[in-house]
Structure formats: structure tokens, C-alpha cells
Image 1 (spheres, rainbow, N blue to C red):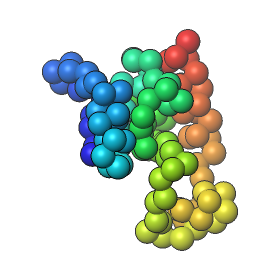
Image 2 (cartoon, rainbow, N blue to C red):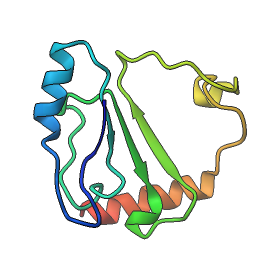
Image 3 (cartoon, rainbow, N blue to C red):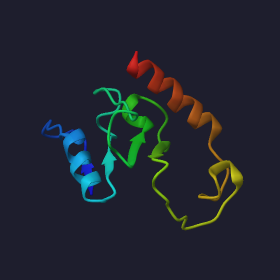
Length: 112
């Protein structure tokens, strides 16, 4: 299941906890697109029954082209391209360290 947490055009917010609980009961992997919700709604991944959650820096006034994917430890994902150990061999290429630092600062300011 993949659900958009908050919709930027019509403002709907999906009941992530309830959807996640239903998915877990049925053994279904659950992805949440939190790009629009991150920094606007509280997100506590230790409390939400989510397997995967995606984020984007530019929605927090961070650098464009930088994102993040939360992957729950119970989920095994297979890489399309094999890479270095810095990404647990899930991704090839060098990380954008400046972009990642900018994303971290934007996230810090957004949740403050």
C-alpha cells in the first residue's frame, strides 16, 4: 500500500496509523509519501506502523534534489544498482553531503 499522508492541493490528511494497523494485520508492506506532511504534521516513526516513508528537502525550503527514505528494519529491499557500503550497498554513487546537511538543517528548523 502506498498513501500520500497530506495532500498539497485539497488539504486532506490520511489516517496513517489506522491504515498502517490494517496493513500490518494483513502482512502488507505500507509506504507513506510524507513529502507534503513533513514539517507540517507531527511524524514519530517509532509510533506509526509504517514500513517505508519518503521525504523531500525542497518542501521544507531545503536544497532541491535531496530526499530521504525511511526503511523499517523489518523490510528487506533489493537494490536496482549495487553500490558502496555508505548506503548499505543499496545505492551506487557518492552522497551529496552538502545537500544532506542542508536537508538536516531545514528539517531541524521545520520541526522547531
